[in-house]
Image (tube, rainbow, N blue to C red; front, top):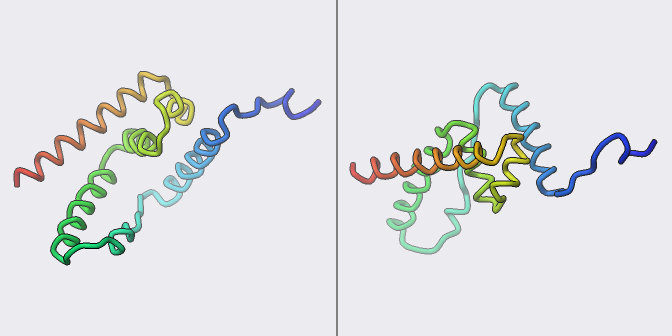
Length: 122
C-alpha cells in the first residue's frame, strides 16, 4: 500500500501549509492561553518627518490593536484574505463552508469600520 492509497495528497500545497500552521498556532494559543504580538518594525525604515512617522505609528498601532481585539475566527479569515487567499481557499484552510467564511469576513469588515469611524470622531 502506498501513501496515496491511505491519505489524499493536498491539491494546494500553500493552502495545506496554512492548515498545518493554523493548527500549530491554535495549539500554541491553547498552551499559552493568551495572544502575544511583536511591534511592527518596518515603520522605522520609512521616510518622512518625525511628525508624519509618529502619526503613522499611531494609526498603525490603533489598527493592529483592533485586529488583535477582533474575534479569532474573524481575524483569521481577514488575515488570510489579506494574504491573497480566496474565500474558497480560506474555507478549505479553516474547515468551514464558503458562506461561513463570507460571513466572518463581513463581520470583520463591519467591526473594523465601526471602530475606525469611532476613533476618527474622537
